Amino acid sequence: MPINRFPIQLRFGDEDSNGHVNNVRFVQFLEEARVRLGLMPLGESLCPEDPEMNFRSLTAQSGIALVARQEIEYRSPLVYRQTPVWIEIWVTGVGSSSLTYGFRIADDDGGRVYAYAQATVVMTDAQSGGPRALSEMEVRILESWRGDPVPFRSSSAGQDPLAVAAAPSGARR
Image (cartoon, rainbow, N blue to C red; front, side):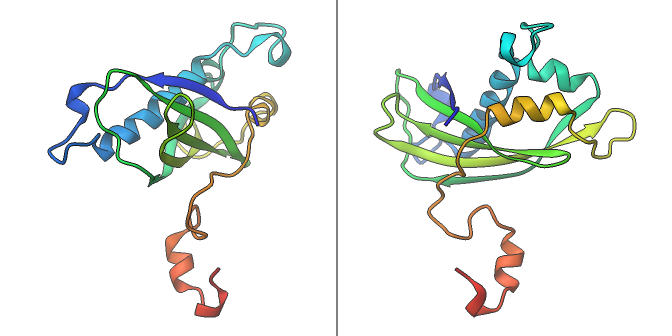
């Protein structure tokens, strides 16, 4: 599975009054991973005409990427320490104008997982602000980053909570 990994250096101020890294910081970790992945050079195989091109500069030419939805499942408390935690990011879905990233925040060896997450991003048109179709090249890049679904514990994770709640009781899994 094509996973990109980035170290996240914790700061003492990341901890809250409960003595663990605050949940708001986890959302910032997801943002950091999306930005880092978007700034990685695409390389010769994906962009032979300009191997230094990155996904962020490609998408910025025609619009803005907006986060439409995020979900985080916390698995273990994370406390301040000097060694970084690692965030892994991959693509779990590609739509006509959107994509979904999967994330895992864990120790370097993967022995302890602190959280799993996913974020859906919608590509919007710079002029209208409405959704815009992903280009053929954008889809090719995203597909090269595609991996497995996020292994959330709950079978309803990743689904619309209102749709799950409204389903007849026998229809839930």
